[in-house]
Length: 140
Figure 1 (cartoon, rainbow, N blue to C red):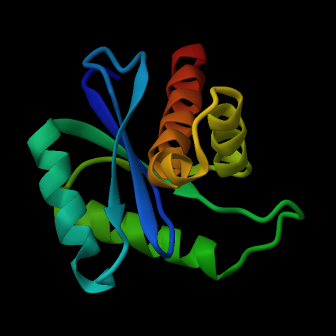
Figure 2: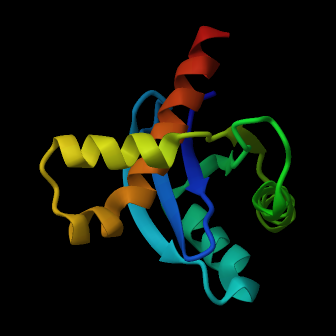
């Protein structure tokens, strides 16, 4: 699976973005995009994916802890399908339960102030999703 992998942590307000290195080994937070306006989100993500040379995309799948599906999961699935069409690249869905919580806790542990945490939490969560995805791909 050589080549850069772009991860997307979709949200209703912000979308966290992370990117792997060329060897698809290490994930790094990249940026946060506004989720609004939703009608331009796929186009903005497609431009970004092309700019960074992504060979694959991973979209965080927000599953509920009890395993039931909610509107957030349906929105993530729709986003993934639209990205497949726009980019003509492999797009995977990856369970992202608790990544935002883990990102928040990690930032608190590092002493990051509340206002700053809000700015970086989503891209850190995307990096956590991506790193887990990359690690699992390597184990296969």
